[in-house]
Amino acid sequence: MRCFIFATHGYLSEAFVYSIEMILGHQENMHSIKMNPNTSTESIKEELQQIVSQQKSDTEYVVLTDILGGSITNLMAEWITKENIYVLTGTNLPMAIELINNNEDISLEQLIHKSIHQGKEGIVYVNEIVEKQERMEF
Image 1 (cartoon, helix red, strand yellow):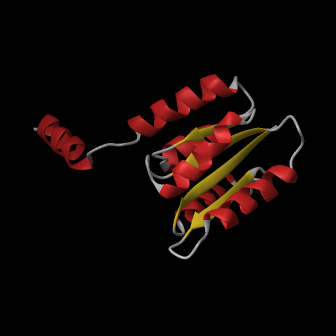
Image 2 (tube, one colour; image 1 turned 180 degrees about the horizontal axis):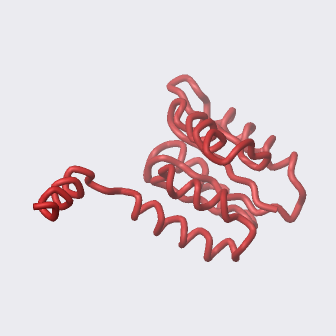
């Protein structure tokens, strides 16, 4: 089984879970951890440990964070020494949907790379697309 944990600054992690469930329906295997200005590192660690303790021992964890070098990402990176924990950062909605929607079809390593590619492809400057379409119509 795979478990997806969104760990971000502020309420972004909760917004990811909400938005994904709005698109894909309820997901049992998603959790959110938020870091606010008054959140202690110990409480973040306890929250992650609580999530992990509720899962089966063979669960693979994908932790999605918001920004490389951010405090929440650094905290989550401490866990990568443990077996079956993978941390990705720079999370966006296309990337997250790719991970969660296709989470059992391929190996986790392949899925991670596929979702990163999808996340990059999802970053588009819409003005340029519209301008190209308008030019092609003439």
